Image (cartoon, rainbow, N blue to C red; front, side, top):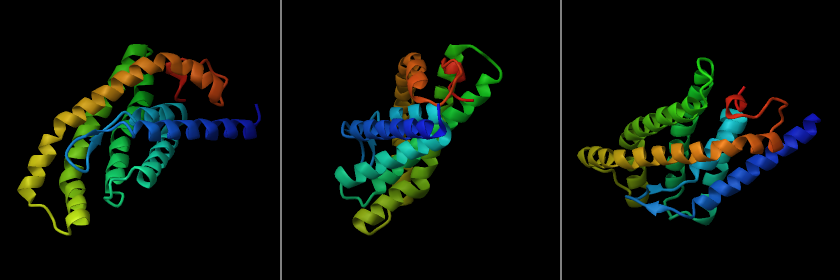
Length: 203
């Protein structure tokens, strides 16, 4: 297969995943503004597993831009920015830990579950500190032209820990289910001649 065809397939796949991620963002569960819960990061995760960190970044960025254009709640992109950070907080540790785990074990269940646990813990930890340092203050200033009291920010950040844990576990379960068919997807859409079991999705 030529490099041009490989690149075309890659771009088409990333476009499809970006569209899927954007569509899933329509089905949001509102939490405390500007935070919402949705399954769109499953598309980011698949893009990352198929094409590495750059694939994940592209899908996450496109779906966030599309959401800002068509669905934004009027917070000037703050919600989308937070969603992008959340995507990266889960997906990038997932991808890098999967690479490391592949070097020490061939157990397909470990390679599906452990990166999900690491991604969930990373998502929860990073967003906790990010919410305290950036998210709530940025949103409050953009929407109301004032900063929140620090004590309220800490309490709100703590209240989001269960939601982030639930989101991480949900993404892990979704990936676990979908991963058993990723071999077929990768074989059709990825530029590789290797057997496309989950073990070989990231080289």
